[in-house]
Amino acid sequence: MIDLKRISLVFSAGCFGGLLNSLVVWFFGITGITGLSGVTIAPALTPPWLYPRIVWGGLWGFLFLLPLLKDHLWWKGFLLSLGPTIVQLFIVFPVKAQKGMLGLDLGSLTPLLVIFFNTVWGFAAIYWLILAGESSSRK
Image 1 (spheres, rainbow, N blue to C red):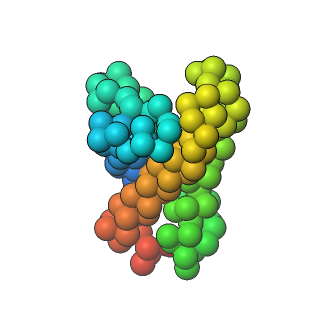
Image 2: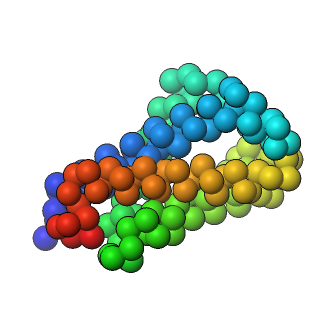
């Protein structure tokens, strides 16, 4: 049976993760942290940049419906964050953005930063699910 409450919960968790991920990416750019690491990722915090990231975060949130690592939520958040990481590094950067495989045209530490930023998404989504009591009811 379809559990609409759970589906909406994982979507909203993913949206929250997308928002937090975006704010961290923006903060790292605006403060020069990405620049100090030799990576040229410094987006402006605008609705056209932010809104799609929140929606995509919500769509990626459906991964939390998978019955993986039920007793290790933080590991689950990290593991599931590898999905958007792989897409970013192997599809978005090289194909859509023309920034080279792994986004290396943006700097040699780009893959590491993408892993970090997407881990923020995964951990934020898990935190949302924990706050909603998801960890005790279904894990």
